[in-house]
Length: 89
Image (cartoon, rainbow, N blue to C red):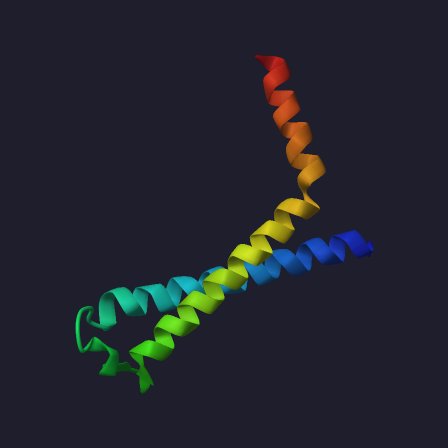
């Protein structure tokens, strides 16, 4: 298998895992843990709200970084698609 394909698949898997983790932690923060003053002491599944918030933030930043790498790896494809779209119009 080509080294380029391995890189692309690795980045896509990282994006999938981090997006899923961010989605789950976001739903937990939205539905299971209250917001507002003094809510930092609440827990869900034995984990404090502050840990959930920190986890959600870090995973979301890793997802954003993986997205930028994904865009960089596929820049040639994206630019050729944009050129093709504008040539048709």
